[in-house]
Length: 164
Image (cartoon, rainbow, N blue to C red; front, top):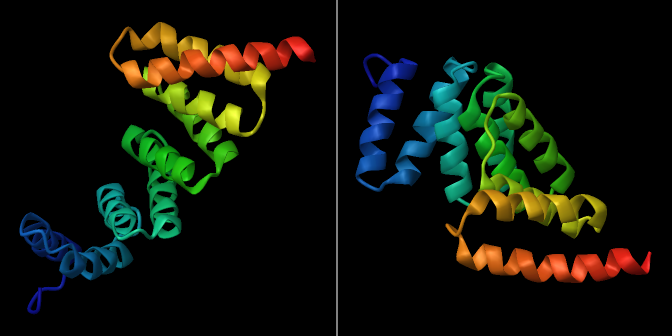
């Protein structure tokens, strides 16, 4: 890196640091590589993950969004962006990112569970109910704890909607 500070060399050295569990040394190298190649999706995803591990959620979300903008068909970028927005409590943004994933043909039970939670936390019970139901239909016993929570929330939501 000292003799040839290319993005590829920085990424290679950062990868070695990551394997040695020295994320603090990898982070500035990846950040510098992103500066050199701002449209490199893999670099941005790596930087976003490092920022998320460092508890810099806003920075992570920015990097994941930049990765998604660099390649709008990148399922990993949209997936990381959605999950980070959810952790930040940006439920409307999470739902929009999940819509992007659905448009790319990416849809699974976990996403429907998080969709349901977003609607539930936004008190949009008319949308939360079918989202929980879709999650339960897709989960097929693979997430018993979340399925239990979803069934409990469905009972409460049905009562809330009956009162309206």
